[in-house]
Length: 361
Image (cartoon, rainbow, N blue to C red; front, side):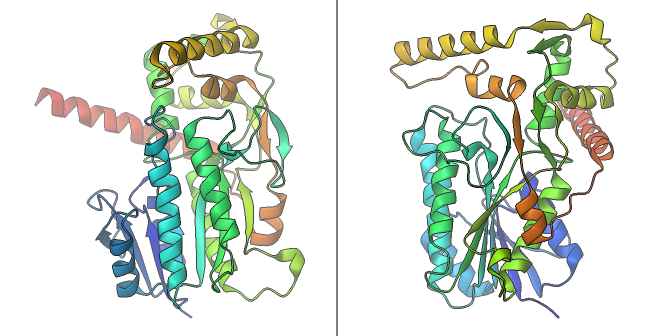
């Protein structure tokens, strides 16, 4: 039985593409639609694509009235490595855009479920061990970066809006995602390999790191959408108004994960040739560099490379509990990390080859 139409905001991005793919594979929706500012890329046969800006209330309302979806999945966001020093850049898209889409969806009578793609980066801590959804979220005054703070504000707005007009909402707090069509993790790791950075390591590599394949991330979105549409009588299995951490479910040391990517790209650097840099030193250096940038640019610029936020990911414990998602969403992550990394690396290397051919043609 078809469960109505579904609209994916940002369905032409990395995760969005795979969410659309998963929705089409389930075949339980009457139609699958995508709203994107640039819908000419990352298209899939069987989905319907629409040009639109999620920050425009008029454009969102017009498209919702045309499609009349029962589910809206909001997956759009600038990448975390984007315009770091401009708060309005992040607020306008992640907060203003999310409020706009959610408010437009709540204003009608046909949208029943709203799934927001949030992030684990909203947690207001630098290091944590299997933290659950009760962990404190970032606020506007937190010392985290603008991306994290804007995602946290949007996350809270989505949860606070649950059932105010009969629209059920949920947030999926997804950790670092990898897979084919990746535009952050895999390309960044390959660039580091090209630069010879595989011969350096920050910290002693005892800190565990949670990642999430894009397949698992997409599956979680489908499960969340279906769960919101179901009548749920057991309060212990409540989904609406709730947030869920989404990971692969088996963290490994951070540098082990990176070396899996580098090995898939052909690297054979022996561990005895890797230079280990003390974590305390590089974290202190990153803090100092950020302070210098802040003072001499009056807070208008931040370093592009040596940012404490990114360094912390390499040398501090960052693991998340997915027990809530397992129990309430029925989320069971597929353990195919090796295969997913190989496929993603092959995709990235082929893209580099094609880009090289274009430059020489």
